[in-house]
Length: 194
Image (cartoon, rainbow, N blue to C red; front, side, top):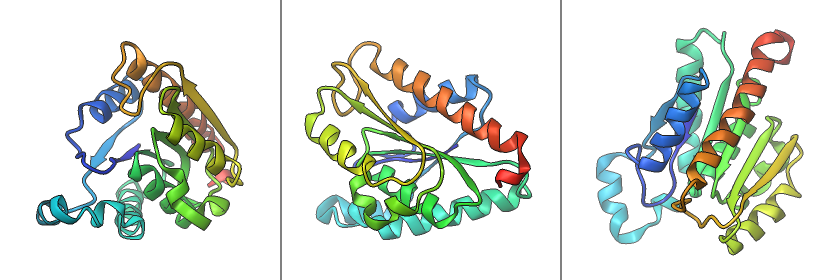
């Protein structure tokens, strides 16, 4: 699973690292990425424009998908995990690489920012949102209605945007792991799906 973090975060995010550990325990490999360089992060602290440049983030994620596919010889399917604005980037990347991306998971994401790419996503997509994150929940419900791919919206009761409440991140890890294992293994078992 390739992880794309959201605005104001990095590959060192304890939330994404925790979910990555849950996925590793489920038998999946993980790669956490920073889609902006250190210099871009510093510049962006003032303007915050690059964090919301979904096109730029998605292009870099597509490059990572291509790199990973080349390293794996195209033998293993790729899953994408995005948080916040990273969720929009993974959805755009999934639309751009339908033959390589087998599963998508969004945690507290902004899939609405993927725009018209939503209708081109073919990978099964799981949207996980905190029940107390009402604005993002509304945006996810609207985006789910535009997804052409098989999808499910899971609401973690009482959880906020960062899933800091007791047990909330455990539930994210459980949901993301079950979804990813199901669809990544299904694609591995049936090469015709690639």
